[in-house]
Amino acid sequence: MLTPLHWIWNGPLALGWVTSSAIVFPILRKVGLVPEANKLDFIANDMRGKIVIVTGSNTGIGRATALNICKMGATVILACRSMERAKAARDEMLEELHSLDAGHRFDFPFARKGTLVCMRLDLGSFASIKTFAEDFLGRYKRLDALVLNAGLANGSGRTKEGFEIMFGTNYLGHFYLTKLLMDVVKATPDSRIVSVSSLMHEFGCLDWQGSLSGNYRALKDRIFSSRYNDSKLALVLMTLELRHRLKGTSVRAIAVSPGAVASDIWRSFPLWYRRLVLDPVMSLAFLSNEQGSIPSVYAATHSNVSDEDEDDETNVPYFHPYWSPSPSFLMPWEVMGPFIGFTRARPRLPRNARAVAKELWYESEKQVIQHTKI
Ligand SMILES: NC(=O)c1ccc[n+]([C@@H]2O[C@H](COP(=O)([O-])OP(=O)(O)OC[C@H]3O[C@@H](n4cnc5c(N)ncnc54)[C@H](OP(=O)(O)O)[C@@H]3O)[C@@H](O)[C@H]2O)c1
Image 1 (cartoon, rainbow, N blue to C red):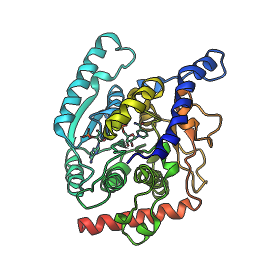
Image 2: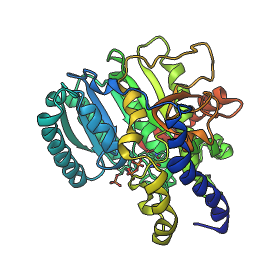
Image 3: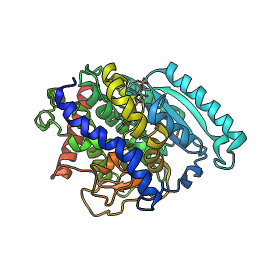
Image 4: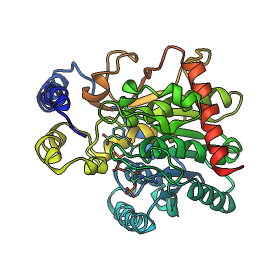
C-alpha cells in the first residue's frame, strides 16, 4: 500500500537519482573523477560442460543472467514457474545466441556450446521445489552454480504452505531448494551458491519473535514492502550461514545486489505510480537488465571470488554494480553510484549476525521439516 510517506521518501531520492545518473556522473567520468566500467572480459569465460541453475529466468535480471552464462558455453537451466513463459524466453534467447554467431563470435567464443533447458519450479510450493530437485538430480550429476534469483517485490497472499508470499518465495523457497541441491553442489569442484539480495536488506528486520517460535506467519505488516526487505536480509544471512557450513569445501556462497534495475519487478505496483514516478526515473537513472545481471554473472562464473577475510565471522562476500569510495559505504552508493559492473562491498547485518544467521537456518529447517514431513 503506497502512503504519503513514500512520496516524502521517494521525491528527493528520485530527484537525486536522475540528477546524478543523467548529469553529474557522466561529467565526473569525463574529467576522470569517476572510474570507467570494469573490464568485463570475464564474460568470455569458458563454462563449457558446466551446469548452472538460474531461478526466475524467463524475464528481467534472471533472463539476462542466464543468457550471459549461456554465452560462456554452459548448460543453463531456466527454473521458472510457467513453462509457457520459460519456453518463450528460451526461444527468444536462442535467437539472440544464433544472431551472435554471425557478428560477435570472437567476443563469445563458446556461445555455440551453450544450451538452455526449461524446467518447472514454483518457489511458492514445497512440492514443486521437491519435484524440481528430484528431476534435476535424475538428469544431472553436477551443479556448478545455483543462482537464487527469482523474487517478488510487492503483493499480498501466501505460498502453498501458508507463508507470507514474499518471504516464502524469495527466501524460504530458495532455502529449501538449496538444501535439496546441497550434496550435488558440494560434489562439484569450485561451485557457487549465489543469492540475489538487494540493497533493501539494509532495512530488513526479521520478526525474530516469530522466527523463534517457529511461526514466520506472524510477520507483521510494517512500512513499505518490509516483508520484501526481510526476505532479502534473510538471503544475506543464509549466505553467511552457508559460508560457515561449507568451510573446508570448494563451494563459495556469495550474495549480490543487482542495483536499481528497470526490470519487470515493478509490474505489480499501481499503474498511476508506475506512470508518474517509476517510468520517468527508470528511463533516466535505472540500470538495464543486462547491467543488473553483471554481479550475479560475475559471482557465478568468475574464478576469483574467494573470501578476502576468511577469519572474519561475519564476512559475507557481496557484490553490487556501482562504484563506491569504500566497501563499507552502501547507501546511497549502492543504488545511486555510477555503474561499473561489480564492486565488492560489505552488507549491513545485525550486530549479532552470526548467531542470528544460525538461528534463522535452524528455524527455516524446522519449518521445512514440519511442512514436508521429511
Ligand atoms: N529490479 C530491481 O531493481 C531489483 C533490485 C534489487 C534486487 N532485485 C532482485 O532481483 C531478482 C530478479 O528480479 P527482477 O528485477 O528481474 O524481477 P522480474 O523481472 O519481475 O523477475 C522476477 C522473476 O522471478 C520469478 N518468480 C516470481 N515468483 C516466482 C515463484 N513463485 N517461483 C518461481 N519463479 C518466480 C518471475 O516469474 P514470472 O514471470 O512467472 O512472474 C520472474 O521470472 C529478484 O530477487 C529481485 O528481488 C531486483
